[in-house]
Length: 135
Image 1 (cartoon, helix red, strand yellow):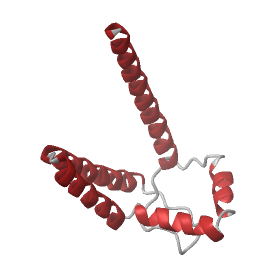
Image 2 (cartoon, rainbow, N blue to C red):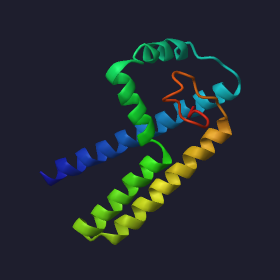
Image 3 (spheres, rainbow, N blue to C red):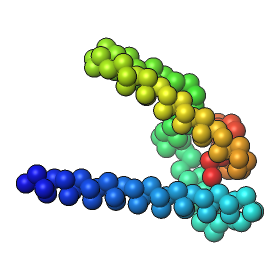
């Protein structure tokens, strides 16, 4: 029984590693294509599809989702997570790790955006975020 659990854990580890490596390779291909000026055929249909949702509750959802991804939204989520980890779990190492990882991910995100320097697609001025688009 114990052998089955370790085999399954090993399979999941290798599967997750393969997904991460494949995703990173696809990301690099897209990034270099964008930097080379390639226009991907799937971009305009996907953008048109989401533009058709720009009314009613869908508009409110996407506007709220955009705000959640802002620095203020992420900062509030980080503070809430740190309070929960400190108050309920008393796990101060996890607080430091969470703060470091979320801050590092934000800096990496900004670095990649400026590395690619791709303009955001304009869907609706009331829900458009500022800065570059993530490739």
